[in-house]
Length: 300
Image: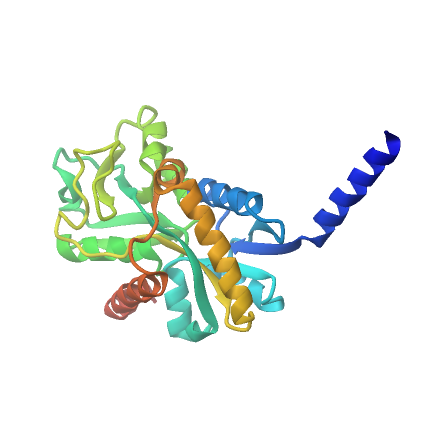
């Protein structure tokens, strides 16, 4: 019996040793709202095959550049999650966009635009007549920043942007009346704090469709404003072998399909893309690039 146990242990150890670690580097802190869905997808990816062991590693800071640069140390074993800030880094020359290739997309965040300014008006119109608002988000020039500038353009107020490690951290400060007026985060996060601060209000849903937990809240697009969604796309470095890149992409995409759109939305309010991955990346990149050029002077 002991020989059988020892043999089984050796076989199991051999299988574990054979697994190759693939690190998905995240630019977010552990509190980021999208992590729950990413962990579920990674768990599924590891359960459905024995060749690779996917792990999520957090490297916040440097306006997300630390995470992006981290995969260059070992392009064969590292992937990185990018967000709209990736586009600004490419435009400024900090990185070269053509050195990164999409392999999987968690998709667009269907998150709420939350403010602590409530003038009794519906939606974004709550912000009219403001001289200035303080916006909390992850990085200057990201989707939250660009969205606030698009809204400010319509209603004529100034924007001061305050970077945080996560949107949730910014929401905590706003709920405590710490000077932040505008945050984009999950409906569930808003519901967590609204009883503690009755001034909190959802101005719009920032996603293609209304949220099932807030069906009465119009989307930002319905309110006449075009702005980039908070997208999360997993990228490989171009130096990763094409066949390896394709294999990792197939595993992650199959895992996401197995987890299912409904579960991903429930866990993190992310909406996986409904178009081909390459097209999704191209379209998402183009809109952010367009608005960065438009608001260039206000971002520097």
